[in-house]
Image (cartoon, rainbow over all chains, first blue to last red; front, side, top):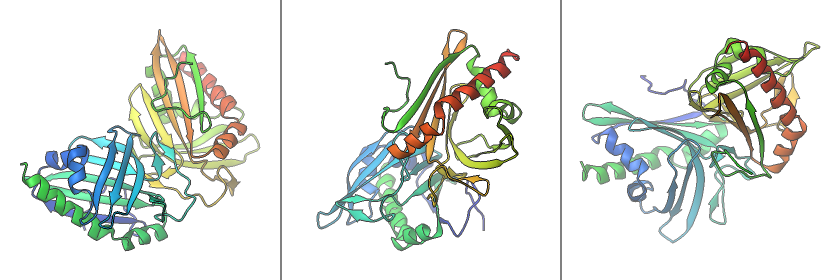
Length: 175
Length: 175
């Protein structure tokens, strides 16, 4: 299996999404970094993003508020770790803005009063040119196997794929 | 008080070292990024660094092994988060290489079998030009007040200042 991972993969700890889409890296990057665009595709329907903060620098705030079809919402806070224009974007929910490490006080991923306890993962999202499109290569990096498993059960594969479909639908209209 | 911090400081969670030294930012950067130099100053004497790995990229390995005067040693593992040549360097012990979040299983900072449990902090080390020298501005960012307090009691102020004195002594000979 070809890997495009920036760091050695550990199958017991990592989840990978690897898809080629017919949208240029420049437009995929825009979809990730412009709040007006991110709001339109980031949550798999019928959920939607109702707020977000994008401070596009290492250590900068990357926070979102998702809302479900019954009006329930939950907030997630994280920070960017690396941003390489049109190439890749790395963020984590294991740190608050300013690179501040989080010490989880509740079970990772648990939701309480509309706030989701961090899953304690990092997402490395790579946009690799392939023909006129993009190889969209996501590595979700976890601290232990139980959290990887929980993230898988929460629907990492389906959720990221569905959101990507929405990104493609949105951005193909802008090419 | 003038702050040079890249992110808003929280006095209840952060520790700061702010010193001006008569060594250029370029040489301070070299002292931090060349293993042969780092080995000579990073540990306050009589402790010394006996091994280190410096993979100078965001997410890259930054690991050290320290040895005390009685031969006791302990290893620390971390990863770089941001590297801006001659300007700043950010690393954390709350992630393993590859941006992998750590879930501490022991008390932060506790040493067992020669391995130190991560303190769960991030160090933002800035090298700001000032005259012919450098304002050496370090922010140690913690996840809670107890860990900040523990880091202070472990001698953050004295330790980082003593190491800096050693850096200056080493690099002034190379100016």
